[in-house]
Image 1: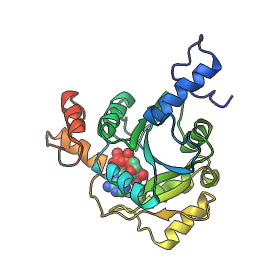
Image 2: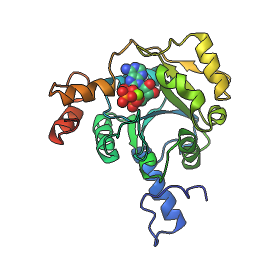
Image 3: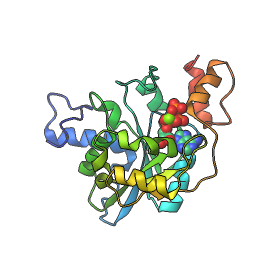
Image 4: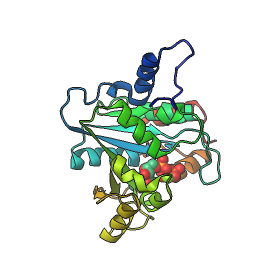
Length: 240
Ligand code: ATP
Ligand code: MG
């Protein structure tokens, strides 16, 4: 069955239909009925570890919304069971709570726990397939990536099929390879897409890595994350 890999709340007693509803709600939150009116619309997908979410992530979503005419952006928080750059990452529930806090006041942004609730390794290709199962055909998916992530695309699981699962759009990033037409065409070829669109955005020199280091040294991160995220980091003593 299409939802077999999703574990959220699918207890022994739940019927398959109830299990699907629970999984769809966990994946889409208040976007649960996204696209149900049958009109063609576009949904942006912003995948990340969000350890923590910062103003750069939100800026990408805002610029993509305007330039790609997206009806909303879903922030998909990566699950736990893998190591990033060889370091253990902050608990998924903390990262999810920060993303939820960051989007709480934004009607067109939502946090998704679908990769957290799925058991085992989580791959973007599986996430996009699950979203196709949850959403009507009238919804077109746009996966948003920074230039550093774009350069890694050819190494992603199931890379050659990614282009058939969503359109991809990229934003430039300081310190990452520039997004010339050659780089975009190369990445498009690797994922089997005809093109990768470019979202332009003023460079934002912010990364979660820098913010973790700042917090570790007891410095404020308030100017680079939403206030509720800064409060969460302080209240829970993250990154100390
Ligand atoms: P870390 O330093 O832990 O890797 P990060 O800041 O890169 O964190 P991620 O959660 O890894 O954040 O990134 C999620 C997505 O956001 C990726 O596609 C990444 O390229 C993009 N991104 C993050 N920060 C920026 C930025 N300042 N400019 C452009 N893209 C960004
Ligand atoms: Mg990163």
